[in-house]
Length: 131
Image 1 (cartoon, rainbow, N blue to C red):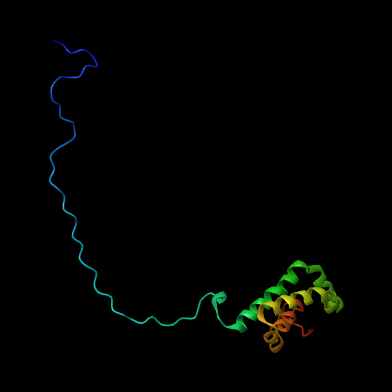
Image 2 (spheres, one colour; image 1 turned 120 degrees about the horizontal axis):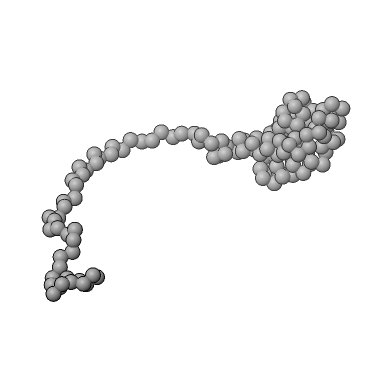
């Protein structure tokens, strides 16, 4: 009997593409040589924000607080430097920044160091000793 289009052949069929294969062995990887215990040298952190030195942290904080004043009020700073009125023009902002500084580093530490004053002179006063 002739087969019609779309008709399946009768009898057992074998799926195409399947051949008998032997199991494949996993590649052999030699064991890693034993690691010698070499002490790692103690390093200072590359990132200064990771330093545990309270003086470094206080300097960084004071400089950031004073830098913000220069960033937010550049014309006022220029006017104060030009006219010699920097202390008066920034009185309230300096007070608020110093309070923040004391809150973060502690009153005793803030009063026993010149970090905040140094930042005011270096950054706000442009290197002049006004504070």
